[in-house]
Image 1 (spheres, rainbow, N blue to C red):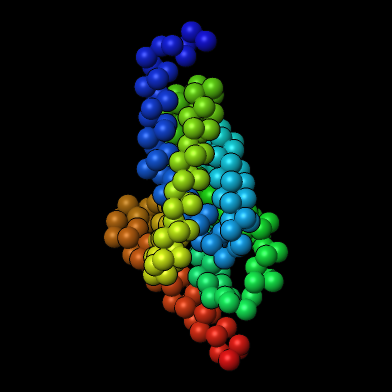
Image 2: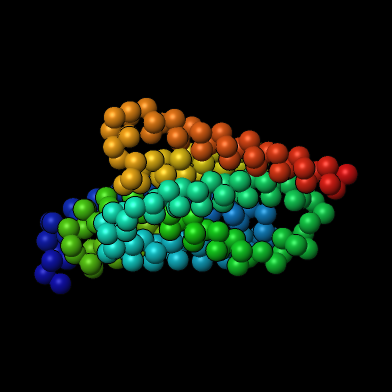
Length: 228
């Protein structure tokens, strides 16, 4: 308890909370995208379960992230997963008006999507959190726990904005594609290429965003034609 009243503890806690505010934006977007098609009562459950489990995942990942990031091809696989998730979330957008029966059974599916996406996107983020915690597990868990309401608030606000401004759904899917492209080129096997050609990092991010939006939109059109 002595550490809890020391300045280093409080400085570290503020750092972790601030890092999570900055880094949780994309997680809030994923949670909102995955939960937006659910009924209101299930939306709340998906946001709550998804946000809580995502923070627990970050605590676990922080312990092993450095070793995981050193594994070749792991981030390439993770990036491909994010691209697939982005396409599915955008492609399912207008499953719409006649599909409420199907949507009502998708709570666990939404939570699984949130967890998988957060698992991939958090690999890099937790390095910054771990550095701020400086090996203090109590500080790490406390800081991440405090971030839960931040993610929940951000996700809830994003769902409401997506209902009013559908273009945000497309922008959210593009963000997931962007992060997916970045994740792939951050893999250890591609470090030499990125160091030699720094523009590859941004090219991959843009390509990921364009791919997700293009394929997602194509799936939407195909679904609309099938229902017509």
